[in-house]
Length: 265
Image: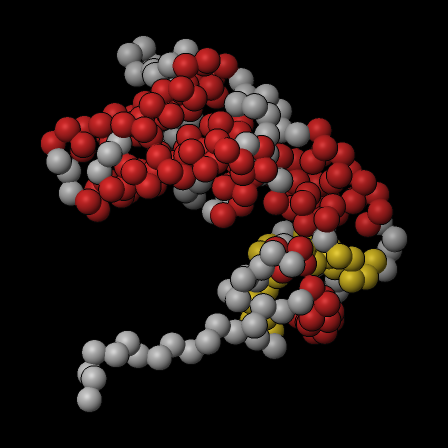
């Protein structure tokens, strides 16, 4: 009798099709968002790029006085991430998304599947969203470039320091991952490319420069294993056209705190 066998794992649940997702969200919307006048469903599942754990990104337009808000729920086994907005709040949040370099709401609005539009306002909203995405993010200001230079310098020096003293594997892993995410974001933003959160950051990087994305992945893997030199060189190469590393002389004024006692009655 072999007691060393690995326990059997349950098979992964099937990935729902775009049609299944749209059908479920179509049943969900009237009961959970009864005041909705339009619903758009997007995300990786609607692009046939989802996984068994992917959720449906749902943009709900309403006049609910509680909007804007975000709600997560599971409906008929489908995880749903709902972004609930009035038309005005959607536009404000879409502009803020674009300013951050990550156009989450405009992407859902522009590329998602419209389930219904009782007012007929979605064509104009989708046209605006597509124009925002096509325009790309605004160029980084000189101050924003210096912010990236400073924080990349801080993270790369952390990694170099850990390598020099033989830092623990866990510390090195955290330093590598923090540096990986920041340099990927900088490479995209410095070239006026959209970024993303989580897996979408890498997808955007790969779309812009597939070979560069693979080099970054390989360098991060080497750094996790103990050889930080390729990743450090990659970061320095990314910083070089913008003045290189920055520490000495960096200065930023933070926001002022409210006066003592402000807001107290």
